[in-house]
Length: 470
Image 1 (cartoon, rainbow, N blue to C red):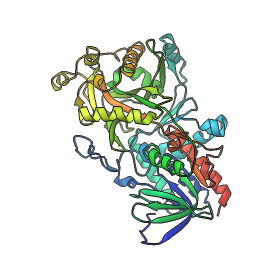
Image 2 (cartoon, helix red, strand yellow):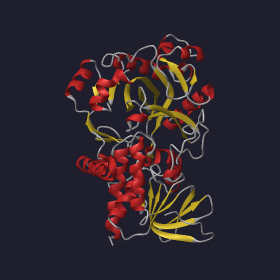
Image 3 (cartoon, helix red, strand yellow):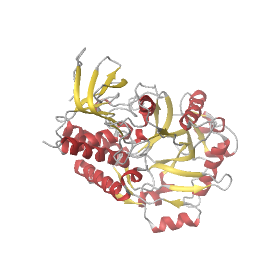
Image 4 (tube, one colour):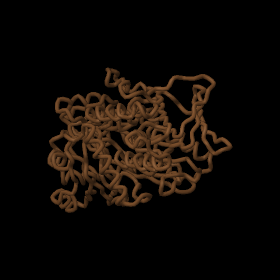
């Protein structure tokens, strides 16, 4: 239900959820399912599900920097138009288990999977990376495979599921899109006043920060205002690799998503694969005006491409005197945007030979790119240490997937994974301010669809217990 604008009036609610990403969506779903006896509003600066259309999909040649970005914002958050990959594990994807316990975290993620299946995801295969053959092959080559169960919905199926979830909640949870919050105040009685850029005001007893990564700066500002401690997190910097699907077919057909970690010989740094998309496409995304790269894939065979793509990421965390990891990642992404007008593209063969990829060289490339990007030289953008790590990792992967280090393997840059500062919360994901909660990727506690969704369910149950059920 979309609220009308009432000038000069402040509507009051029991609960306001800021952000309609994975955590906000699953929190609203669980509150609706439990029929919580509370008046609830969910606010998002993005668009309703049916209006989330990236201009590139509609024919634009490059990212036009929509504000807000339709890929990153709107109902379902950044996960909506992703490939809909849910990793059920505590080995990666966040630290929810550190707050609620390993057993509870796994139980919540299994429940999220049950909900997705009930909404149309049951036909999506549940993979497991606990493959002894792949794990053994990786170990023999000094690579380490992390274990998880993986439900891959695909972008197309994921959107349909989210549509059903919205319909389920529509009559019980009020939703307001295209709304940017400018400030949050607290009244004398301890309740909150949420102010929007359009001059609207909404009051509530419990305020839920579920802003996701794109709302990280705003969430940090709210925490600073209320004196809530935050711990700087890491930033992951790397490239998106694209190559013929046949090269990784023996892995992706078996486990689909393989999280492989490698410790480099040269620097002793950790490099990992991330977000593998068999038969997928590379996409550009806009985070706070900075264009980076990501990958999607589909369930419908008719929408599949001939390529597989995945990220190779190097983690970076800083100490005194510089601690802002995200600012470091942003500066590198801005440099890529400056040189390439957006995303840069380079053949692996050109990179190791120390030459830029030109339009002429790309015409001779056997691997056809799925994203139109600017041919260039990634060594002018990515720092030497990270680039050396990535090159070493590609040669390591070539041992278990021969062809990874081919000259025509494509590298898109840069891919940056910004992690929000970890907000100080207790075992209920509540801050030191009574009634103020932080969950999902926006809290820095989770880094994945499964864990973010699980955190939403968890806090919804706490709220249902507080307000009771009708």
